[in-house]
Image (cartoon, rainbow, N blue to C red; front, side, top):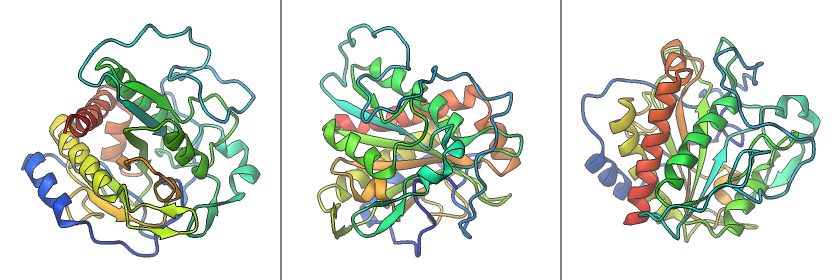
Length: 307
Protein backbone atom coordinates (compact mmCIF):
# COMPACT_ATOMS: atom_id res chain seq x y z
CA UNK A 1 0.00 0.00 0.00
CA UNK A 2 2.06 2.87 -1.26
CA UNK A 3 0.26 5.94 -0.06
CA UNK A 4 -0.05 7.65 3.29
CA UNK A 5 -3.76 6.85 3.23
CA UNK A 6 -6.15 4.20 1.93
CA UNK A 7 -7.54 3.60 -1.56
CA UNK A 8 -9.39 6.59 -3.08
CA UNK A 9 -13.15 6.36 -3.61
CA UNK A 10 -12.93 7.77 -7.13
CA UNK A 11 -10.34 9.27 -9.43
CA UNK A 12 -10.56 12.96 -10.25
CA UNK A 13 -9.79 14.46 -13.61
CA UNK A 14 -6.53 16.35 -13.85
CA UNK A 15 -6.55 20.02 -14.87
CA UNK A 16 -6.01 20.73 -18.55
CA UNK A 17 -3.12 23.04 -17.76
CA UNK A 18 -1.28 20.06 -16.23
CA UNK A 19 -1.70 18.03 -19.42
CA UNK A 20 -0.29 20.88 -21.46
CA UNK A 21 2.69 21.30 -19.16
CA UNK A 22 3.43 17.58 -19.18
CA UNK A 23 3.14 17.36 -22.94
CA UNK A 24 5.74 20.09 -23.26
CA UNK A 25 8.16 18.26 -20.98
CA UNK A 26 7.77 14.55 -21.72
CA UNK A 27 9.59 12.70 -24.45
CA UNK A 28 7.81 10.28 -26.72
CA UNK A 29 8.47 6.59 -27.33
CA UNK A 30 9.95 5.91 -23.93
CA UNK A 31 10.42 2.53 -22.31
CA UNK A 32 7.70 1.48 -19.84
CA UNK A 33 8.29 1.16 -16.10
CA UNK A 34 6.88 1.90 -12.66
CA UNK A 35 3.45 1.55 -11.09
CA UNK A 36 0.85 2.75 -8.62
CA UNK A 37 -1.80 1.59 -6.23
CA UNK A 38 -3.68 -1.65 -6.65
CA UNK A 39 -7.14 -0.66 -7.90
CA UNK A 40 -8.54 -2.98 -5.25
CA UNK A 41 -6.58 -1.10 -2.59
CA UNK A 42 -4.95 -4.25 -1.19
CA UNK A 43 -2.31 -3.56 1.44
CA UNK A 44 0.50 -6.03 0.83
CA UNK A 45 2.42 -4.89 3.89
CA UNK A 46 6.15 -4.24 4.14
CA UNK A 47 8.27 -7.37 4.16
CA UNK A 48 11.67 -7.63 5.76
CA UNK A 49 14.25 -5.79 3.64
CA UNK A 50 16.13 -8.03 1.24
CA UNK A 51 19.85 -8.07 0.50
CA UNK A 52 19.48 -5.45 -2.20
CA UNK A 53 18.36 -2.85 0.33
CA UNK A 54 21.14 -0.35 0.95
CA UNK A 55 22.19 0.73 4.41
CA UNK A 56 20.34 3.73 5.77
CA UNK A 57 21.17 6.15 8.57
CA UNK A 58 21.52 4.73 12.10
CA UNK A 59 18.30 4.76 14.10
CA UNK A 60 17.55 5.97 17.63
CA UNK A 61 14.69 4.82 19.83
CA UNK A 62 13.15 8.17 20.66
CA UNK A 63 10.76 9.87 18.23
CA UNK A 64 11.32 13.49 17.28
CA UNK A 65 8.49 15.78 16.26
CA UNK A 66 10.41 17.71 13.62
CA UNK A 67 13.92 16.98 12.30
CA UNK A 68 16.38 19.65 13.35
CA UNK A 69 18.63 19.06 10.35
CA UNK A 70 18.45 17.56 6.91
CA UNK A 71 21.19 15.01 7.51
CA UNK A 72 21.25 11.30 8.45
CA UNK A 73 20.81 10.45 12.11
CA UNK A 74 24.10 10.42 13.96
CA UNK A 75 25.96 12.22 11.20
CA UNK A 76 28.26 15.14 11.86
CA UNK A 77 26.90 18.61 11.10
CA UNK A 78 26.93 19.28 7.39
CA UNK A 79 29.10 21.92 5.77
CA UNK A 80 27.56 25.25 4.79
CA UNK A 81 25.38 25.01 1.71
CA UNK A 82 27.06 25.92 -1.57
CA UNK A 83 25.79 28.92 -3.44
CA UNK A 84 23.69 27.86 -6.39
CA UNK A 85 20.51 28.39 -8.37
CA UNK A 86 18.38 27.16 -5.45
CA UNK A 87 20.06 29.24 -2.75
CA UNK A 88 17.41 30.63 -0.41
CA UNK A 89 14.89 27.95 -1.31
CA UNK A 90 13.58 25.28 1.08
CA UNK A 91 12.52 21.84 -0.09
CA UNK A 92 10.94 19.25 2.20
CA UNK A 93 11.37 15.61 1.21
CA UNK A 94 8.93 13.14 2.74
CA UNK A 95 10.21 9.53 2.57
CA UNK A 96 7.08 7.39 2.47
CA UNK A 97 6.44 5.17 5.51
CA UNK A 98 9.00 4.07 8.10
CA UNK A 99 11.03 0.84 8.07
CA UNK A 100 9.77 -0.06 11.56
CA UNK A 101 6.10 0.80 11.08
CA UNK A 102 5.37 -2.92 10.85
CA UNK A 103 6.61 -3.30 14.45
CA UNK A 104 4.14 -0.64 15.65
CA UNK A 105 0.87 -1.57 13.99
CA UNK A 106 -1.23 -0.47 16.95
CA UNK A 107 0.27 3.01 16.88
CA UNK A 108 0.09 3.52 13.12
CA UNK A 109 -3.50 2.29 13.03
CA UNK A 110 -4.60 5.15 15.30
CA UNK A 111 -6.89 7.57 13.45
CA UNK A 112 -5.80 11.15 12.81
CA UNK A 113 -7.69 14.15 11.45
CA UNK A 114 -7.03 14.92 7.76
CA UNK A 115 -9.41 17.87 7.61
CA UNK A 116 -12.15 16.15 5.65
CA UNK A 117 -12.31 13.03 7.81
CA UNK A 118 -10.08 10.64 9.69
CA UNK A 119 -7.49 8.16 8.44
CA UNK A 120 -4.83 5.87 9.88
CA UNK A 121 -1.70 7.55 11.21
CA UNK A 122 0.41 5.73 8.60
CA UNK A 123 0.76 2.38 6.84
CA UNK A 124 3.57 -0.15 6.50
CA UNK A 125 4.01 0.35 2.76
CA UNK A 126 4.63 -2.42 0.27
CA UNK A 127 7.71 -4.41 -0.84
CA UNK A 128 9.10 -6.41 -3.72
CA UNK A 129 8.49 -10.15 -3.77
CA UNK A 130 12.13 -10.55 -2.72
CA UNK A 131 11.50 -8.46 0.39
CA UNK A 132 12.92 -5.02 -0.47
CA UNK A 133 10.66 -2.74 1.56
CA UNK A 134 9.17 0.42 0.13
CA UNK A 135 10.26 2.28 3.28
CA UNK A 136 13.90 1.37 2.53
CA UNK A 137 13.50 2.40 -1.09
CA UNK A 138 12.01 5.77 -0.18
CA UNK A 139 14.79 6.56 2.29
CA UNK A 140 17.49 5.68 -0.24
CA UNK A 141 15.97 7.79 -3.00
CA UNK A 142 15.28 10.64 -0.56
CA UNK A 143 18.93 10.70 0.53
CA UNK A 144 20.04 10.86 -3.10
CA UNK A 145 17.51 13.59 -3.85
CA UNK A 146 18.62 15.60 -0.83
CA UNK A 147 22.24 15.63 -1.96
CA UNK A 148 21.33 16.69 -5.49
CA UNK A 149 19.24 19.60 -4.21
CA UNK A 150 21.81 20.66 -1.61
CA UNK A 151 24.44 20.79 -4.36
CA UNK A 152 22.31 23.50 -5.97
CA UNK A 153 22.12 25.50 -2.75
CA UNK A 154 18.70 24.41 -1.48
CA UNK A 155 17.95 23.95 2.19
CA UNK A 156 16.53 20.43 2.46
CA UNK A 157 14.47 19.04 5.34
CA UNK A 158 13.42 15.39 5.66
CA UNK A 159 10.20 14.58 7.51
CA UNK A 160 12.06 11.64 9.05
CA UNK A 161 15.35 9.87 8.53
CA UNK A 162 14.92 6.43 10.10
CA UNK A 163 15.34 8.20 13.42
CA UNK A 164 12.10 7.27 15.17
CA UNK A 165 10.29 4.01 15.97
CA UNK A 166 7.32 4.70 13.69
CA UNK A 167 5.67 7.42 11.64
CA UNK A 168 5.48 10.36 11.51
CA UNK A 169 1.73 10.32 11.09
CA UNK A 170 0.31 11.79 7.91
CA UNK A 171 -0.90 14.96 9.61
CA UNK A 172 2.55 15.55 11.10
CA UNK A 173 4.21 14.99 7.73
CA UNK A 174 2.11 17.82 6.33
CA UNK A 175 2.79 20.01 9.34
CA UNK A 176 6.58 19.61 8.96
CA UNK A 177 6.40 21.01 5.44
CA UNK A 178 4.12 23.83 6.54
CA UNK A 179 6.30 24.87 9.49
CA UNK A 180 9.43 24.75 7.34
CA UNK A 181 7.72 27.28 5.03
CA UNK A 182 8.74 25.02 2.17
CA UNK A 183 8.82 26.26 -1.39
CA UNK A 184 8.09 22.68 -2.50
CA UNK A 185 7.34 19.36 -0.79
CA UNK A 186 7.79 15.98 -2.45
CA UNK A 187 6.66 12.71 -0.90
CA UNK A 188 8.59 9.73 -2.29
CA UNK A 189 6.79 6.39 -2.71
CA UNK A 190 6.59 3.18 -4.71
CA UNK A 191 3.41 1.26 -5.48
CA UNK A 192 2.12 -2.22 -4.69
CA UNK A 193 -0.18 -3.03 -7.59
CA UNK A 194 -0.83 -6.08 -9.78
CA UNK A 195 1.75 -7.72 -12.03
CA UNK A 196 1.67 -6.05 -15.44
CA UNK A 197 0.78 -2.65 -14.00
CA UNK A 198 3.83 -0.52 -14.71
CA UNK A 199 4.95 3.08 -14.93
CA UNK A 200 5.43 5.96 -12.51
CA UNK A 201 2.82 8.55 -11.64
CA UNK A 202 2.69 11.80 -9.69
CA UNK A 203 -0.25 12.50 -7.37
CA UNK A 204 -1.55 16.07 -7.25
CA UNK A 205 -3.83 17.60 -4.59
CA UNK A 206 -7.47 18.08 -5.52
CA UNK A 207 -9.38 21.22 -4.59
CA UNK A 208 -10.41 20.34 -1.04
CA UNK A 209 -11.93 22.54 1.64
CA UNK A 210 -13.36 21.25 4.88
CA UNK A 211 -12.37 21.05 8.51
CA UNK A 212 -8.68 21.88 8.72
CA UNK A 213 -8.08 21.22 5.02
CA UNK A 214 -7.94 23.93 2.38
CA UNK A 215 -5.87 23.30 -0.73
CA UNK A 216 -7.24 26.24 -2.71
CA UNK A 217 -3.93 28.13 -2.56
CA UNK A 218 -1.73 25.21 -3.63
CA UNK A 219 -3.71 23.36 -6.30
CA UNK A 220 -2.33 25.31 -9.25
CA UNK A 221 1.26 25.49 -8.01
CA UNK A 222 1.25 21.80 -7.05
CA UNK A 223 0.00 20.90 -10.53
CA UNK A 224 2.90 22.85 -12.02
CA UNK A 225 5.38 21.14 -9.69
CA UNK A 226 3.96 17.70 -10.49
CA UNK A 227 3.96 18.20 -14.25
CA UNK A 228 7.58 19.34 -14.22
CA UNK A 229 8.66 16.37 -12.11
CA UNK A 230 6.78 13.96 -14.38
CA UNK A 231 8.39 15.37 -17.50
CA UNK A 232 11.91 15.24 -16.12
CA UNK A 233 11.33 11.80 -14.61
CA UNK A 234 10.53 10.47 -18.09
CA UNK A 235 13.60 12.09 -19.58
CA UNK A 236 16.05 10.93 -16.94
CA UNK A 237 14.85 7.41 -16.12
CA UNK A 238 13.45 6.38 -19.50
CA UNK A 239 10.40 5.10 -17.63
CA UNK A 240 6.95 5.54 -19.08
CA UNK A 241 3.97 7.05 -17.25
CA UNK A 242 1.69 4.57 -15.51
CA UNK A 243 -0.28 2.25 -17.79
CA UNK A 244 -3.13 1.96 -15.26
CA UNK A 245 -3.46 5.33 -13.50
CA UNK A 246 -3.61 8.79 -15.03
CA UNK A 247 -4.65 7.89 -18.58
CA UNK A 248 -1.06 7.80 -19.82
CA UNK A 249 -0.22 11.27 -18.47
CA UNK A 250 1.68 10.16 -15.37
CA UNK A 251 -0.55 12.46 -13.32
CA UNK A 252 -3.37 11.67 -10.91
CA UNK A 253 -5.43 14.06 -8.77
CA UNK A 254 -6.71 12.94 -5.37
CA UNK A 255 -8.64 14.51 -2.54
CA UNK A 256 -8.37 11.73 0.05
CA UNK A 257 -4.73 11.98 1.14
CA UNK A 258 -4.06 13.74 4.41
CA UNK A 259 -0.50 14.59 3.43
CA UNK A 260 -1.88 16.69 0.56
CA UNK A 261 -5.11 17.92 2.12
CA UNK A 262 -3.35 19.47 5.10
CA UNK A 263 -0.45 21.00 3.19
CA UNK A 264 -0.15 24.76 2.82
CA UNK A 265 2.93 24.42 0.60
CA UNK A 266 2.98 23.12 -2.99
CA UNK A 267 3.17 19.35 -2.60
CA UNK A 268 3.02 16.16 -4.67
CA UNK A 269 3.52 12.43 -4.20
CA UNK A 270 5.79 10.57 -6.63
CA UNK A 271 5.04 6.87 -7.11
CA UNK A 272 8.29 5.75 -8.74
CA UNK A 273 7.20 2.29 -9.86
CA UNK A 274 5.30 -0.88 -8.98
CA UNK A 275 7.22 -3.06 -6.55
CA UNK A 276 4.96 -6.04 -7.29
CA UNK A 277 5.76 -6.14 -11.00
CA UNK A 278 9.00 -8.09 -11.67
CA UNK A 279 10.21 -5.71 -14.39
CA UNK A 280 9.59 -2.64 -12.26
CA UNK A 281 11.08 -4.35 -9.21
CA UNK A 282 14.30 -4.92 -11.16
CA UNK A 283 14.53 -1.17 -11.69
CA UNK A 284 13.58 -0.14 -8.18
CA UNK A 285 16.19 -2.44 -6.62
CA UNK A 286 18.95 -1.13 -8.90
CA UNK A 287 21.06 1.61 -7.30
CA UNK A 288 21.88 3.17 -10.66
CA UNK A 289 18.20 3.50 -11.53
CA UNK A 290 17.42 4.96 -8.10
CA UNK A 291 20.01 7.64 -8.75
CA UNK A 292 18.29 8.43 -12.05
CA UNK A 293 14.94 8.62 -10.25
CA UNK A 294 16.38 11.07 -7.75
CA UNK A 295 17.93 13.10 -10.56
CA UNK A 296 14.64 13.28 -12.45
CA UNK A 297 12.84 14.54 -9.35
CA UNK A 298 15.62 17.03 -8.57
CA UNK A 299 15.53 18.40 -12.12
CA UNK A 300 11.75 18.78 -11.96
CA UNK A 301 11.86 20.52 -8.59
CA UNK A 302 14.61 22.86 -9.77
CA UNK A 303 12.67 23.71 -12.95
CA UNK A 304 9.61 24.52 -10.87
CA UNK A 305 11.51 26.68 -8.39
CA UNK A 306 13.31 28.57 -11.13
CA UNK A 307 9.97 29.29 -12.83
